[in-house]
Image (spheres, rainbow, N blue to C red):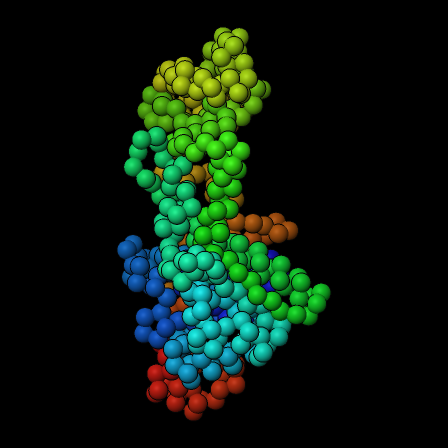
Length: 397
């Protein structure tokens, strides 16, 4: 699988999570990723070092494998010329600056397309390329709040809660990847590059597809349902003797299996629960009845009973449970990396397989500026020119 994009070179001028996750995915698929970082400090996530892994920030390690780091001062006119030199033979250029910032530095789409007409230029922004907030900075929790995701997350009456993983950032990286791969296919047919755009805001709106559709259809503002959903019941968490179990009986057949497994077949003859529509309308009474049965079992026991009846269910695992889980480990997606500067280093691999193969770990997350000289020499700079650029602090580590 790592050979799929082996002839693709990507100039990665992004930081934080969305852009780096996109380029890491490209790198996992075999592309050469040249990561441009600020001299001295680099990607902001290098300083997000709580927690850290042997003094290196886990936030950087998680999103920057299979890349080469080059330190270039993009605010310096000579640094901008270096970037243009790298773009000459690149396939993809991607940045995560505010709209207009790249153009001010002479590194906008129209400017770089003149240098390389086949370039696939990708821009990741917070609020998109138009509108009054186009130049306003944004991060994952801001967009979860702005797009309404926080309004439907958590239990009724609770304070606002952020989804506990960076769904906006990482999904934006995936949408940018989708655009880039589509553009690569288009270029193979036309020979022309194009402009790809993605934003955190549009990603958030994409996640809100169903709540917004429900609102447009009914003009009712969606509520918080905790672990449940507005459309199906029972489809939520229930207390057990020692913790919780999630049960998702998404149709009449599964509801029947649930009732028989829990020893409450009489619910099947109760008109309040004869259809999903009725079960949703009487969700509180249904929840109370099912939970009374669940409270008679510990979680391990009820999981076994429900799995034997083919009723979809799950414990609410903590991170250590996930790490030790037999099913998860059978997928070999958590992969140990030998020979890295961090002992016992492991990664979460690309979550797809092609021909039953996962990606290849070719390069560890780079040290700041680790590949500056190598990349500049490949771009045509000789040793004297590189030393001069270093002396002038245009490039460095």
